[in-house]
Image 1 (cartoon, rainbow, N blue to C red):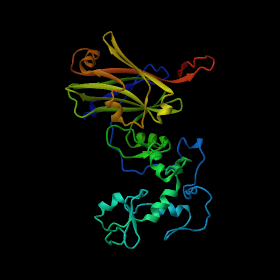
Image 2: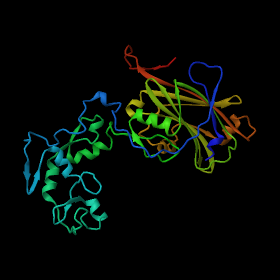
Image 3: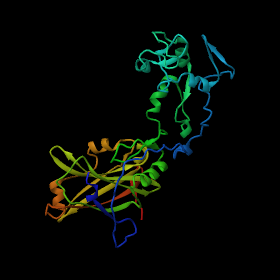
Image 4: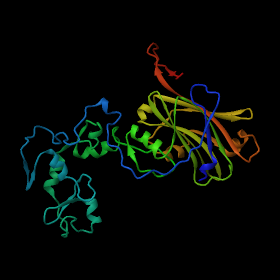
Length: 349
């Protein structure tokens, strides 16, 4: 990717007469640990202690040890650990297998270990741990994201489904230029984008960028840029990139909201590009970073500029791409004085 051939001249809020020039030189994500601190949404819900989850067994359960079949079950935390597969560390669901010595593992991992117990190396055979399966059917467990603020408790078989869409689950890094595996809450990811990916950060809800590329005919993989904006107390990712659509390259700009989809719907944005007395405009709702960058791009949910039109906007010499993209972000507010529930935009000054 010829990232060095793209520069972005940005004008942020305040009406400065002189543009600030900067160049996005993106680097791949570092191998750092994900953040396990306080989640930005956790103030809305009671916190659980990370060291001691709530009682996962529904009903009135004595704190003393319970005996189910031949398995001695200590308090709730031990039950949860008992149902953890020693290979994949996920919760085990029937069929749960065990070796002759009583060591258990999930059915998925049974084939992975070639029918050998990972604990004692004895042959597994086809022994089911029926007692532990009955324990699983009777349990209610906290969401695995309870240290991040989720207060929900579910029957054992409903827990996994909830966790795939839990609002407290960590976010994936929204950086588009590499397969970054970092996850965390929003404050952590903002710092990660700034410090590790060297993404440019701006404050304000309007932007005025000029993208320059020396050879607009070459589009190998994706030439892209990412800028983060902070306004209304939230963070937004502005993406601009070139990619191959069919036989011809196109240029696309779109906005993603660093938060959940329900909160993203509270905001709108507009983009405009033009030149030589012509212009294209786009208006929409930012997509949540829960949707991957590729998913948003491939759905064409943004401002798309065909190459010939982009060159026309650039002045028509077809030797250099020069696109100026302007835009703004606003918050939709409901006017309580109208019966129809009309939304009026809240524009930042």
